[in-house]
Image (cartoon, rainbow, N blue to C red):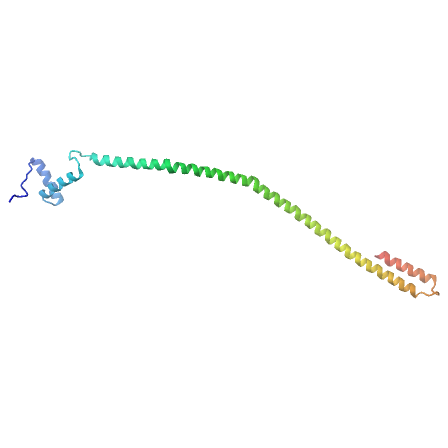
Length: 183
């Protein structure tokens, strides 16, 4: 039966000391550390001479370039056209506001002024109508008073006889004229 641990590696004393320190630091035996180192370099495909880890740098740089490219594409395809459209929309809104301010507000002010003029005319018409109604009422009262005076004159005149003196007739006429003049 063959021993699975039959391979050996030779290295100098300085490397041996470093190897021993790594094993002590990690808390594992040297054989396990060696197998883990080989697995690590095998899986990561890293070169132990490459201290700066150029493969990782290159991968990060490639991912960074892809990310920047994606951002630039989004900027070109979405952000710039969107900004352009928003600017155009803002300009359109400004034009609408200017039109509204210059035309609609002036029209509304004109309409309000015309309504005020019309309201004033209606107020004057109401005053005139009130005067006309008052005059008609006064005219009716005047007619009624005049009819009353005439009726009294007729009654008094009919009560006169042939024997009524001219002076009484003259007094009746004067009294009737005074009443008419008082209207």
